[in-house]
Image 1 (cartoon, helix red, strand yellow):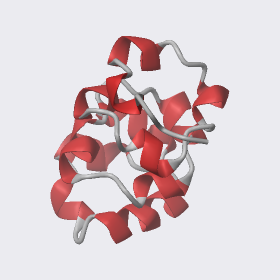
Image 2: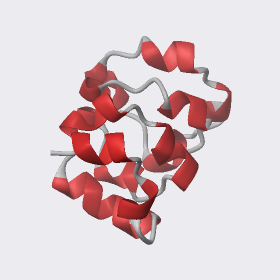
Image 3: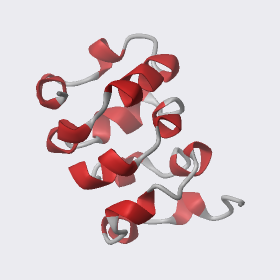
Image 4: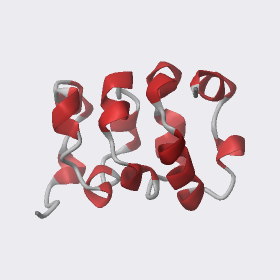
Length: 101
């Protein structure tokens, strides 16, 4: 499955994707989205994303995730994030960090 055009998918479109369907994106496809897309993710969508997505995010993409959306962030996702970002604790905002279970 290719990712052609994934970078052109707007936040308005991603906002409408049902949480179970968002799990169909590969990490490389999902991380080709702009950081604005990460800014509209819901907790239900975060719960459906594979840890592979978080092994490839940039600092800006992670920082754009709404703090409330991280209420469903898993240990496996955080471990994968540690592979992408050298020190995720220094990248997460205080609000984000306080919402990670």
